[in-house]
Image (cartoon, rainbow, N blue to C red):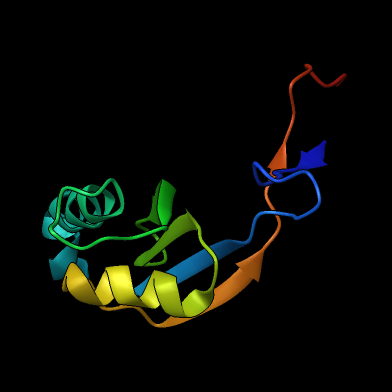
Length: 105
């Protein structure tokens, strides 16, 4: 597996994991909130951004949502989430592991 690299071969892309701890009652609106932030990242939210939304995962047993972004900084990730009115609890640097070949079991 190789970490995701930026279009510039001399620099690694920065990835960030956003953690959200949600009450069970917020789970119903989760898809809408994630879609809103993804639209902002895609440039459809009226905010110019260099943040790329990659994917999200919701753990219902933990009432936790993780979202992964590629961005120049954690501040940029925070800005798009703020613009989307999607509160977060923590942003952590992450290394994306992408495999292009099937792994052996």
